[in-house]
Length: 496
Ligand code: B12
Ligand code: SF4
Image (cartoon, rainbow, N blue to C red; front, side, top):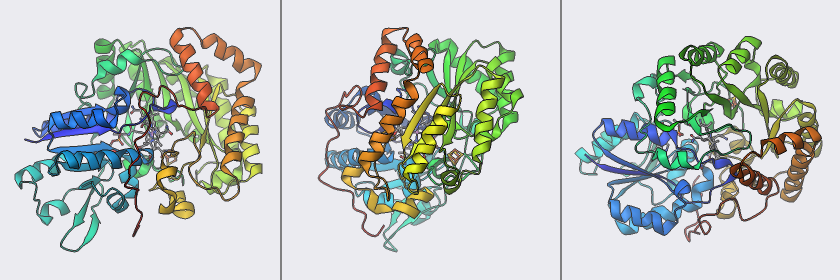
C-alpha cells in the first residue's frame, strides 16, 4: 500500500477557474483506492493555499508519491513546488499529469527537472499499475515495468533518453466507478457556489463522455482524452445526478465533455433519462463549447424539456478563412444556421465562444469576428485570447517550445496574451478584446438582461469580477494567494 498525494497547483483563482471539484483527480482517487492505496487530493486554488502552506501539508502527510495536475499556465508554480517537495524528502516520487504533460510528452520531463515520472492522457489504467509496481520493487523499478505502463513518460538511464509510452484511453467508462467524492472534499465546493451570472443554482460538474474525433489546430483536448468518443451509460449518469441531488442538494449541473453533442442519440437518451426519472434540475452544456454541426430541432427540444437552459457554442471566428485555417471541419454558413436553429426552436440561452489572436489572423478577420458576434442571436459571449498549448497543431506550426518562457507562462490563460502574434501587437489585441466586450455587452437587450440577473449579493460580486476580467484589471479576482512564487529555476527548453 502506498500513500499518494495529488494536488492542483498553487495559484490565484481566476475568472474561468470556477470553484468546481476536479473530476479527473476524483477518478484517479477511485482507481488508486481500488488497488488498496491511500489517496488525498489537495486543491490549492480552491483552498487559497500558498506554497508554504502546501509544503506544510506535504511535510505532515509524508506521501510516498506526490503529483500535480498541470495546465500550461501552472508551470512556474509547480517548478517551485516540486523543488521544495524534493527538499523535504528526496525519496518522495514526484509525478506530473493533466493537460500540460499530455501535450508536451517528453518535453515535460525536460522542463520539469524535479519530476520523476509524467503521464500523458487518461491515467486511471496506468497510474495504479505504476504505483503498485513501484511499491513492489522498492521504488527501483525495472525497465520491464516502466516499459509496460501506458501513458508513462520516463527517463531511461540505460539508453540515456526520455521514453514516452503509448497512451491508452479507458474504453468502458462505467468500469471506473464514480469520482471519489470524499477525496474531492465536496462540501467545500458546495458552500461556494454558484459562479456565473447566468447560472441558476448550486453548480456541480458532471461528465457524460470523453474524447473528440476532430482535430482543431488550437485544441489540446484530444491530447488528453484522445480522438475516440466514449460515454458513460444512461443508468450511470442518472445515479450520479440522483446522488448529487440527494447528498448535496444540487440542482444545477454543468457538462464538461469535450464534445457533448457529437453523438446526438446519446444526448437524446440522456435528456429522456432525466425526464423519465422526473429529476427537476437545470443543466448547461458546453464548458468546452458544443460543436454547431450536430444540432437538430428534436435533440434541442428534448434537451430543453429536461432542464437545459444554456448552451455554449464554439463559433471561434467570423472569418471563413480562419475557420478553415483552424481545421474546424465546419463552415461559417453552417455555424450561423445552427445558432439560429437553437434560437428559433427553443428558449435555451446561447453563449458564443470566440478566439481572438489566432496566428494567421489579421485585423480584418478580428473585425469580422466581432461583426458576427453582434449579428448572431447570442445572450452572452466569451472572447478568449488564443493560447498556444503544447500538443496542439498550431503550437508546433507557429510557436514551438520557445514560446514557453517564465514570463509568458503566466499568460497562458484565455484572458491574457501569451504568444507573439505575427501581425497584431499584444496591446492591440488586448484593446480590441476589451472593445469587443464593450460593443457586445453594452446593448440595451444585454444590459437589461444582466441587470435582471443581479438577483443576489453573490451575483453582484460575480458581475464585478466579470467586469475586471473583461478589462484586464489587476489584481485578478479573489487573489487569495500573494501571487505566484517565482522560481529561480526557469524552465529550460534545451533539446526540445
Ligand atoms: C471541462 C474543462 C474545464 C472546466 C473544468 C470543470 C471541472 N471542474 O472539471 C473549466 C471550465 C473550469 C475549465 C477551466 C480551465 N481550462 Co479547461 N477544460 C475542460 C475540458 C473540456 C475537460 C476536462 C475534463 O473534465 N476532462 C476529463 C478528465 C477525466 O480528464 P482530466 O481532468 O484531464 O484528468 C485525467 C488526466 O489528465 C490524468 N491526470 C490528471 N491529473 C493528473 C495528475 C497526475 C499526477 C497524473 C499521473 C495524471 C493526471 O488522469 C485523469 C484521469 O484520466 C478540457 C479538455 C480535455 N479533454 O482535457 C479543457 C482543458 C483541459 N482546459 C484548458 C484550459 C486552458 C483551461 C483554463 C486554463 C482556461 C483559462 N482560465 O484560461 C482553466 C483552468 C482551470 C484551473 N482550475 O486551473 C485546456 C488545457 C490546455 C493546457 N495544456 O493547459 C484544455 C485541454 C482545453 C483546450 N483549450 O485545449 N476547463
Ligand atoms: S475544439 Fe472541440 S471539436 Fe475541436 S478538437 Fe477540440 S473538442 Fe474537438
